[in-house]
Amino acid sequence: MKLISLENLPTEQVSHNPAIHKKVMLRSHDLPHLTNFSQAYFAPGQVASAHAHHDMCEVFFVESGTGIIRIDGTAIPSHQAPALL
Image (cartoon, rainbow, N blue to C red):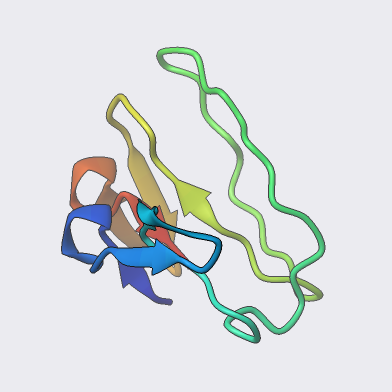
């Protein structure tokens, strides 16, 4: 598991316009079996059942709100880990 916080990532210029800056969360080959990158919304109190994917990596990006993500039995409050890989 890799924990990433946007506030700790350095900014970089984009190649086509040095006035535009970005923060890179994933680079080529960071995820060996990436099959898609999606966005899901959870209503207050909504829960996803525990499950595992053996054929892909899963990325969680917490844009807003609070909650708990459990990975391999470890509870991680969403405010501590805006992005989990």
